[in-house]
Image 1 (cartoon, rainbow, N blue to C red):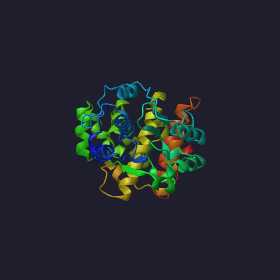
Image 2 (cartoon, rainbow, N blue to C red; image 1 turned 135 degrees about the horizontal axis):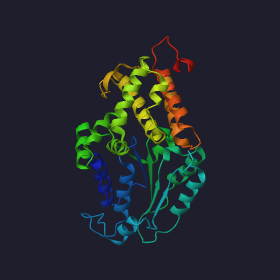
Image 3 (cartoon, helix red, strand yellow; image 1 turned 60 degrees about the horizontal axis):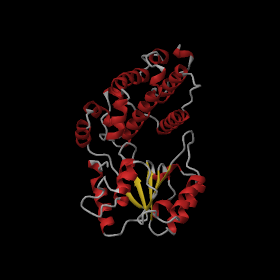
Image 4 (cartoon, one colour; image 1 turned 90 degrees about the vertical axis):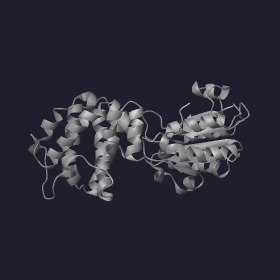
Length: 329
């Protein structure tokens, strides 16, 4: 079983003490930015609660019936839901199926554990339906909600959960973990990922380091008006499009954090000089997220790359200068 990451040990110890005392909360909210391993932590928690070893010091043991069933994705007392592929929200039907599960008896006489991935994407009706169970939880049922943006959850839902917040580790801790994981070069991507080690590792595995260096130079020259959108778009191939979207998202977020708290992040090169209009930057981020969520193969990658870079130039251009498509030819 995956052990909690170094930056999760405090939260893991809190839950282990509660489990040993027989006081596991009926609802737990795991929150923090993407890339901190909330899914892995939820899996560890499931292993802890469903382990049948009977030894508090070794649980989860990894070899009992409960642990083996969990490893094989076949434990009858574990239920998972999340946003379905191709959709953007977690609907009421998924919540209703979860609630039906919580009313069942445990197959093995222990906890019944329900994991709600992407809980911050619940529709209003889904959240209201879940709220009724949070207010009157069935005995022996534990609901675990995972959210990258917990503020999007209704306050009534948040208030009925024990919140476990995960903060990004210090750069040194993230770097040490990435080195141990065999990805030392990914440490350079930590500032662009909010210092989330797993996010940096994922980008590195996509070949992000070299592409990011190229993108940073392009964004800088575009903001200074020293390069055309078309010439920059020439260096991007269709398979690079998902990675380009990821890199643009983390770059805009990094610039926003630097503007809100100077000195917090270390921006590469002269990007530290850029000041993005907050409203324009949020609008650009929304566009990037929507484009990434579409994953539409019918899109013309070349035209989309040009549009992404042109929109960037629009939010990063100095005041008083507008850019049109005609100027980019």
